[in-house]
Amino acid sequence: MIDLTDDALEQFLAEDPGGPVVMLNLLRYVPGTGRADYLAYIARTPTISGRYGTEPLYWGDGGTPLVADDGHSRSVATSSRCQRSVRPTGADPPG
Picture 1 (tube, one colour):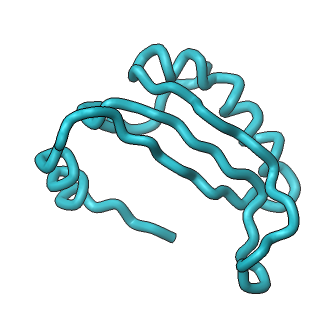
Picture 2: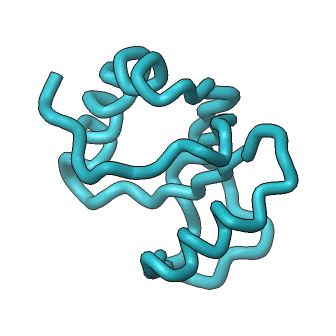
């Protein structure tokens, strides 16, 4: 798991060379309800995107992994673009 610290985020924002940031997420669903939970989150994406100025670029189910060790394959890959000035403000309210 990657732990983003406040200091690392502040440094990233301070080093802004201009232009958007493209973020890649490699997700592994929680067994059982993980896929359904993530799809419910994705259904809210247009609202979140409008609020923060992000743009979803890609979403696709994972296939057979080429290089992942046992237990480290991913269920889905997503990418999105946003301005570097977007700052996380905690969890969004439901819906």
